[in-house]
Amino acid sequence: MTVYDLIRDFWAALAAVFAFLLWMVRLEAKAIGNEREIRRLWTQRKEDLEVAASARKETNDMLGEIRTDVKQILSRDNRP
Image 1: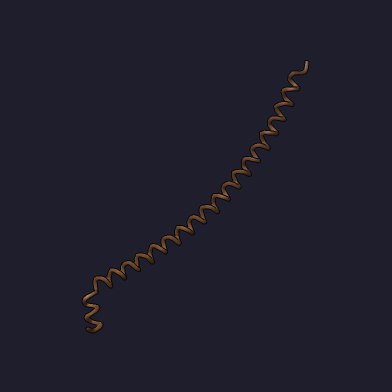
Image 2: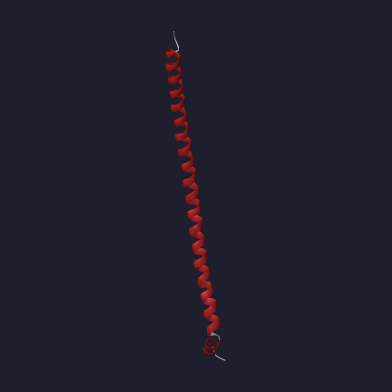
């Protein structure tokens, strides 16, 4: 039996193995792409949390100033 006969007899099995290997390569590439996207999202989330914390601190500082101003105004109005 020659190589040509083997290929002719088992071409369907060889094609299936080739298709399976091709599918596995595509699956691995998709997994690597997803891993990169997850890392990017975690980095973006970290940055977003830092920005939110900074904005919250600025807002709290501003509210503290406003409270102080309101207390001063109210103490002036309550004088006889």
